[in-house]
Image (cartoon, rainbow over all chains, first blue to last red; front, side):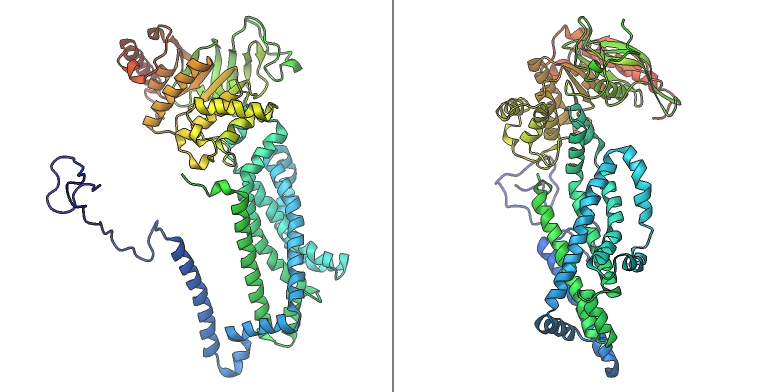
Length: 293
Length: 281
């Protein structure tokens, strides 16, 4: 059905033409500039742009390598050299074991941190007195730099896995608590009140609050695990015989820049994969967020 | 009139226990509610009874305490002085015998329409088969049979509000409290919802208290209107909708042409004008 009349004389009376005339010509909106406010994008083009960004990044790196004076090029190896080095590490140096160790440290310590932080954050979000008691302390801990605990943890626990994972725990736990507290406080008040007027008891109200905050909590965890990677490297650089950080530290002693950059690149890829897993988990756990009218 | 200021018993904790014979479903008894250490007085020594099987609308200018009164009835807040009683027992907290529908959409986003309706029934400990059966009945009552398995995100604003109404009614509350239930909906949907509410009230024979800022809506829904003054909130007028002669209009346009309606609307507008004069909202 044509809506109004394009071009020519405007219709004198409101009318809708049905079948009695050719459809009005297709309307051509103004060309969209690249930086369009409130713009829209198809999923395909979003992916294309994202990939383009990655390609541009590696291209800049490549150009930087080849414009460096030859005698200094070994301090900034080319992309293909770093990739080859990663392949070599996996094939010949049992790098997969180091990656596995690092992944284990990250996931295990983050899992323990979440296991405590999620209930604690939700608990504080639900009960104002618990919040008043606990929040100032956990909030204050965020300002104690986790990295500065590294030597202390070393003295206490020695060069053990436990010391490294304790550092990872300290690095993300208190931020995680604060974020989850915020997520819980952001739950719409009426949701809880309507639960109460339906006869929900305290335990059920906590359940409602948790279910309502859960998607935001998972998002907070996704953002915090990125920070955990930072502390992993610090933990493994200070004392470690294995793990990605240790491999990079050994390489630094012999100025093997390609290995160091390979380690960084590996961590980057693992981080992105972790991020994607969290997003997939969110889709699976909260299907109701993806339905639309 | 019994005064319950002191000696609240544990038996009264739920507010549903041991109704005192001959007492109204709800009674506001010299209720004062102040905030900020008494510097804001939302309600000032307000007393009235809500009559059984009637729709009582509470209206008044913004900030007149009408919503506060409803929240006291729901047990979501407590009065500073006086008390609100249900069948003679002071209200000591929220409970399913006083179902409430909020202006904001409160159906749980992680539950389907049916599961939302069944949620409260589950809290009450009903068996699965009975929950299912009750849910079907109320799905039909609010005309959402076709959306039983939809999540709230798939529903329009009006439909979400119908889920809230169904879920509240499914618990068979003695009282239905409506807090500007259609305030977020557009005019035509509001109109449909108002007629649906009348239909439901006629079928389920409920005692209803509704807060609204819409004069026409108040006249259409109510058997009686309580008009509050602006801060401090007092009862300015208590008006029975006598022109309806004991019946309710199933269609809104039937009311709009009734001379009694026109008089009532004019009267309420005049009262509203009086309250807001010389003040900036």
